[in-house]
Image (tube, rainbow, N blue to C red; front, side, top):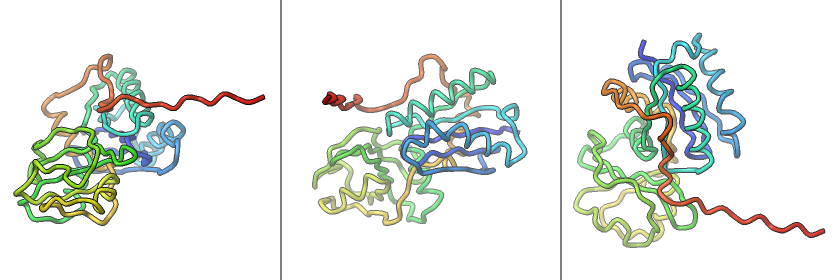
Length: 231
């Protein structure tokens, strides 16, 4: 059946989906602070059960590999690795920003002579961004962390850029780029958008090593120091 289970946990939206030969069968998602750790396995179980399936029917697992939330990505990848190891099935890793770009292709209409500039919020005026051709999602500019200013992405000109994602809105008020169009509707990476990308990787047997694969954070984790308790 070529059933692939997809897991996307890079943002506060936690989602899982089942695709058959790249076509969406069903998706479940929640938007809850800390929901990844509490709800991910529950979502997977209920998704399969509601569609008359169990884990033995799954032939591969696809996971969003980043950039995005440190905690979310770790939980998603750890869950995917554990399932792949236990079921002895392959693991597929997909760039989060490419998933977001595919989401635009599936939900929005646009002239083919454009490039896609998905952005994810990385706090303050920083975003994770990448650039893709609309037609085939060929990478124009690799994923990177960018501190936004009015001249960001000046190297990407002469072709209309459509930018979207939860990082794009904070650039809109200062952007002076002559070739940028902002999408008003909010768009997040979701497991439902991973199907065709994962299926192509499956056909190409582009699988990941369960031991060595790590999330693509793009920048080092900056945790906060715990405050000393006052007695």
